[in-house]
Amino acid sequence: MAFGWSGRETTRLQIAQYCREIETYLCQKNDGHLVRVVGPSFELVSRWAADGVPLKVAFRGIDRYFERYYRRGPRRRPVRIDFCEADVLDLFDEWRRALGLQAAGPTVDGTPTAVRTSARQGGSLPAHLARAVMRLTDARTSGALGPVADDLVDRAARELDAARTSARGLRGAARDALIARLAALDAELVAIARAALADAERHAFEQEADEELTGFRDAMPAEAYHRARNAAVDRLARERFRLPTVSFS
Image (cartoon, rainbow, N blue to C red; front, side, top):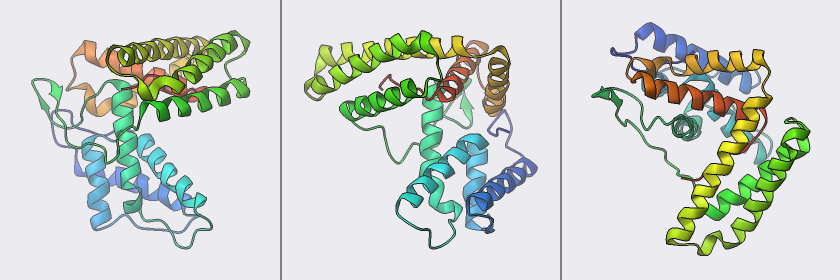
């Protein structure tokens, strides 16, 4: 289920359903303890619905908060949805960037206009490279992509590992060249992931991409929608095989 602006304001019924879905998911994450999404919490989640935050993106944001919460030790009290807001909005920003959607919400001349930016931005290039190397190593170890992709994954990991030793001091054209190389490597990895999908998986991902983009489709030109849909399938394929985003922006 996806929500957003499509030429008219999201209906109250859609928002109420969205909030119920979030409440149910939060209850599950809280081991069955019911924490109601009402009052200010309802207003908060209603804004997510109106801004077009797909439910699965909101769920992943909630998951991210709980993962950090568990790392701090045993839970002492149920988590309220308000605590998850920063993670949800960060994931929404990541999702939009991955799909080439620079913003969400009402549109001007057919182009979505910004309504909110993330509270936290992406970090340094060396830190990005370190995370990418670690996740590539995990993907290689899992063997999910199969032996055909092993050479590419190994080569990408070696390049990234070498690049991170010098990335901190790179400036100007040298830095731009590295970022361009990262984009090229990223495209290779996604192409491998796409090719490894079974037909049924690819079809399921295409349907999921259409659902995620429901709230944006009417506001987008056909070509822009096609690019965003392809990017959504790429993102799902990347997640399927646990591949990192190697490109840097």
